[in-house]
Image (cartoon, rainbow, N blue to C red):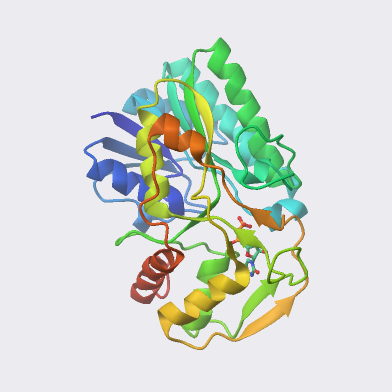
Length: 324
Ligand code: UDP
C-alpha cells in the first residue's frame, strides 16, 4: 500500500482513478481547485485539499503535510477546440502550473509521478496505429502544451532523479458505477450524443463528414475509463520512467458512436452535420504494444457497446451530472 496524492482528482478521469486506487487499498489525497472538477466527484474515503497549482506555496504545503509516496497529475485543460482560441490558458495551466507541482515535489522530496499526457502530442500521424516511435508534431496548443511538459519530465527525470510514467491517453470514455463524465461545458462526443438521448439537447452534431475515412467522419480509439485507471495502478509499480501510448488499438467513427448510442439508449438521436472542428486529426488509433509488454496492461472492456452502456447507465442515474 502507498500514499498517493492525486492532483486533479475531482475531474472525470482523476475521480475514477481515485476510486480505483482506494479499492486497491492505497491511501489517497485529492488536490483540486474545483474549476473543472466537482466536490461530489471526490470519493468520501479520500482526504481533500482544495487548492490551485497556480500558487506554488499551496501545493508545497499540501505535499509537506500529506507526504505522499507518489503523485498522479491530472489537473489540466484538455479541450482541443478551446486551445485553438485561448492558447495562453493551455500554456499557463498545463505548463507553468504543472511546473509548480514538479518544483514542489522536488523541494519536498517526492520522487514518483504518473502524468496524464495525450495522443494530441502526435498531431496528424504519418501512420496508424500510433506507437511511441512516431515523431510528435502537435497541431494544436493543447497537444503542444503536453509535449512541452513531457520534455520537462525528461529533464527532471535525469537531473532531479524523478521517476515518472507519462500515459498518453487516447479517448477516455464510459463510467464506473459511482463516477462519470460531467464537464460544465460539454464538448466531448459521447456525453453530447447521450444528452440528445436524454432529451436535453435537440440533435447530435457531427463535426466534419468529408474526412478521408470510410464514412467521412473522424475515427478515435475509445478506451474504457476503468481500463485507463488500471494503467495508472500499473504505472505506479513501473521499474523505470517511460512514455506510453494508451488506447485499445481499435477505432470507431463519429457516425458509429452515434449508432451505438441509439442502440444502447433505445432512443431516437437526430443528427446535424457541421463543418470540421479546427485542430481535429482524421484518425487516431493507439499502438499499445509497449504498455502491454512493459506494464502488463490489457484492456478488459474493449467493446465500444459496453463502454457506451456504462456511460449511459451513469447519465440516466445522474441526468444533471454532479449538479453543481
Ligand atoms: N465530435 C463531433 N461532435 C461532437 C463532439 C465531437 O463530431 O459533438 C467529434 C470530434 O470532432 C472528434 C471526435 O468527435 O473527431 C471526438 O471528439 P471529442 O471531443 O470527444 O474528443 P477528442 O478526440 O477531441 O479528444
